[in-house]
Amino acid sequence: MRTVRTVAELRRELAGREHVGLVPTMGFLHEGHLSLIRRARAECATVVVSLFVNPRQFGEGEDLDAYPRDEARDGALAEECGADLLFAPAHEEVYPDAFSTTVEVAGVTDALCGAARPGHFAGVTTVVAKLFNMVAPEVAYFGQKDAQQAFVIRKLVRDLDMPVRVEVCPIVREPDGLALSSRNAYLSEGERQRALGLSRALRAAEAAVADGRVAANDVLAAAREQLEQAGIEPEYLELRSAKDLAPVERVNGSTLLAVAAQVGRARLIDNTILTGDQ
Ligand code: AMP
Image 1 (cartoon, rainbow, N blue to C red):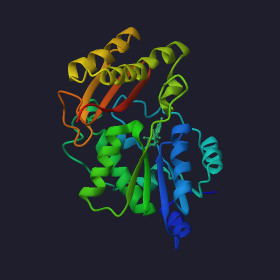
Image 2: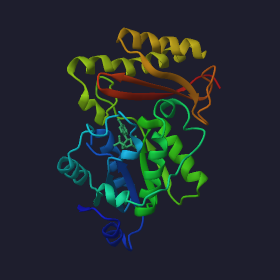
Image 3: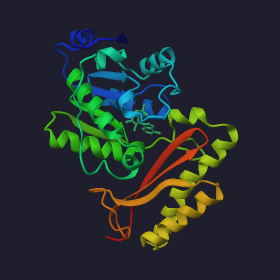
Image 4: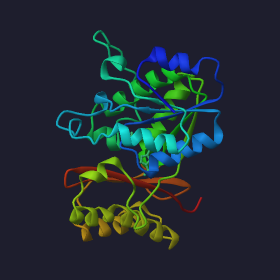
């Protein structure tokens, strides 16, 4: 695996390569990221992993400075999973002084994480559009962990006719249910225990739906009970159509249940897709 830091080097390395797969990350890799890299390795001739903590997707007062970084470890893990290239650009390579363009998907970015983090998704779509132009991948791999992000990126690609296929991979969890996240590094042992409330809330909602309780109020009450038991006040806990992210009154067909909560210093998100009566 080679590490490249400039777009020029990246393009030189990729010249003449076909069937390129891209896994965009902010680093501090864990099994969630590695599942995307392994999938790319299985499906593509060339695998590029990008490593860039994108300041534009962090709001003021968020954890940009504290965000965990360990490039040496990330490089070793990416290589073990079969990546061919690690693209780890400096800030100025991505955002030179005169940079002034924003790529923004409207509407679906207003709710959920977008409501709590104004400008976050514009930061995400701007950097993802740039990465797509830099790498020109045939396929790009994202995690269902960031369900709204995956939705927004699919829409970005569709709206702008970007010649890239977006693959969304399942959420990887710890054996006890906690969704893997680079931000889990912030949790103390006690906070980590409390954080289990998120995945327990999702499982309780799934059980309610399996029981035939498909009204939004019932599903959300089942989830909220688990959050309360863990002492977690969610930033949001919402049911949305998985098709267009519109709010729904009942689980009917493919429905996203998404939760976000601050646990200690970590802002955690998790979600599940519920399928009730159709
Ligand atoms: P990040 O480094 O947090 O920007 O994440 C990079 C990619 O990894 C995104 O597409 C995430 O959705 C994905 N990802 C993060 N955590 C997980 C997880 N637990 N399971 C699957 N994918 C994940």
